Amino acid sequence: MTFLLSSQNICEYLVRYNLCTPEEKDQSLVELKVAKNFNLLLSLRNGRQLLVKQEPHNSEGKTAGEFAREWQIQKSLKYFPELSYIRSWLPEVLHFNPDDSIIVFNYLNNYRDLADFYAKEKENVFPPAIATAIGTILATIHHATIDRQNYRDFFIQNHNQISSNRPPTLIRGLDRIAPEVFGSVPEDGLRFFTLYQRYDNLGQAIAELTRAFDPCCLVHNDLKLNNILLNLDWEQVLTKAEESLNHGKSGEEPIVRLIDWERCGWGDPAFDLGTLIASYLQLWLSSLVISKTISVEESLRMAMIPLELLQPSIAALAAAYLNQFPEILVRRPDFLHRVVQFAGLALIQQIRATIQYQKSFGNGGICKLQVAKSLLCRPMQSISTVFGLSESELTTHSLIPI
Image 1 (spheres, rainbow, N blue to C red):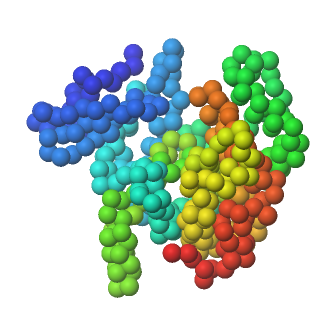
Image 2: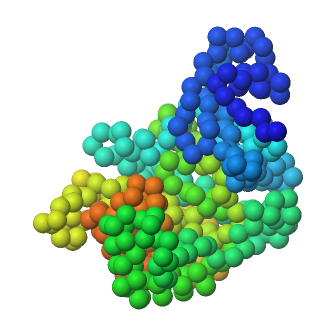
Image 3: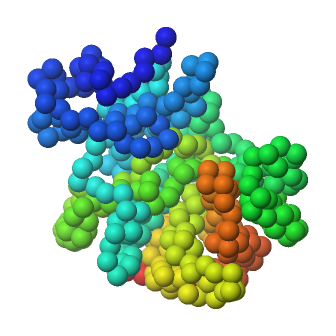
């Protein structure tokens, strides 16, 4: 029978697996963290904090098995010591119990959610230096694993669900409206399906992107702003890192960490970068001034967070990635085009998630769909819109916005 975690038994569980001592658990504080999984944050009296997650079980006692992917990344660093330097950019996993789908992390209380940082900073501050750090780390991981058959075999042989050796299926079910949709989607949500099917070139662009999908390296597969942690002292860390570099040393504390690797797999690097860029674009699109009396073009121009404010960070992200991994342009000359298209694909995925969970598709969704359509159907022309720079400027390695 599956062991189900609760606020009452979490301390006993941690003691049983030597994750804390009986003395540590005394006077500890347990806090429920709202998320898709059952998450508990345990604050021990010695100052340590542990984040404990358990996947939900269905009526048959089965889970999605996503924590196994998170654990697989940690195992790979031990199996391939040459990848150990990546560890500092990942979450700190202390324990994994596959039988009960429980995973325990060292809670990084000196970091904060990057989406939260952007939301709470005054005057809409989006430092390009942060995006540069993210782009460098992501490119390093992709570059380190690209076309490495031994790495790919490790993930696939140890856990079949890790394999993403096939095109993504994010847009499944949009080619035609099945009868069951009418019972599960609200009336305004049906407008999305109607609009989507009206644009023949949109479906064609997605089909072509699917055929071009190139699984060649380890990818995060769910890279968005709230899956990135920012060091609370990132400015000081950045300064120390630059000083260390000038003295021929490497910095110890990373500015950012990429977390929640539950959907990772062997996939297309353009998908990771495009998904992250879509997360930045979402900051712009979620700040639109929406009204029935305002056109889509006017709404996009009147956003509370103008796209022009985000472009330096988006450009810094892409430029840092290409600086760290210039070989990707040799392998795939159309790489930036694919990145832009995957950003559009991610926006459509966001629209579908809103319809599924919030049961709505209003004028904001229509604006987002128009942007997604432009990114997917006209990627070459959309590059300057997304990045604020031309493709040639982005691919010139001497140009890194900071």
